[in-house]
Amino acid sequence: MAARAARAARASGTARLATAGVPAAQRDAGSHAPRNPQLVPPSTPPVVSPPVSPAFPLSDDGARQTLWSRVHDVLRREIEAKCWAPGCRLPTEKDLCVRFAVNRHTVRRALRGLEEAGLIRRRQGLGTFVRERVLEYQVARRTRFSANMDLNLARSRSHYLYGDELPAGELVALRLGVPAGSRVVYLETWGEAEGKPLYISSQYLPYPRFEGVARVFERTGSLTASYRTFGVNDFFRRESRITTRLPEPEEARVLGLEDRHPLLVVEYVNVDADGRAIEYGITRFCGDRLQLLVPGA
Image (cartoon, rainbow, N blue to C red; front, side, top):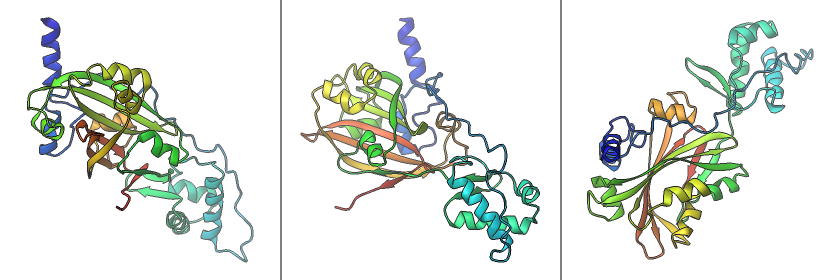
């Protein structure tokens, strides 16, 4: 009895990662979604340190180059040599002025050239950062996280966060084609690529068809592999809705984001070979680490 009461209390909590910040219509999807108080990835993004000293000196070839272009070339060479790793914050304009013994106008012109070349991005109030590699993610008839990362030659891994069996909210019931209030399986997962968190996903599956899928996913780290355990050898994307928004604090914490970084939100339904809905999900991708590709018909 006490365990049932505890589950009900979790299921009715208002601070929910699964639906934080989504539109009111989507919020129904997670009206019973619990919040996991231990929602912390098994690993955290690596802390990148700047080079201890300049790797490349300022060229003396002043007769052929303007001063700003010489500063630009030094920073470009350091970025390309990975002295400044992707995602690393560059020194302030003031520090660069001191380093190169130039005025701020010269530094700003050099930084503008690096930004135009796609090597850095400047974020108001936060600083200048070396641009990270942007992965391409195809939202197609067969959409698989691992397959998409393989196309990018990126090391990837998915992780289990939380699982439960819950009554379906109105939107979940509509997407899965089940009666409102009927039991569904609920999963929270997150995925990483190249050692950095890339997405958080909230998934709803029909019960009892997928009863116990959380334990299988926890073991395999793959929903595709988990489906095979339940006799679903192939599945297809029926629909995808793509929106963007800023992350909620909990999402930003799990994904290692600043709260001003946008999320790409994909709300989707997957079906089996017979066209029956097997999964309704809401996935939140890091918008500055990934771009979505929707192939033509």
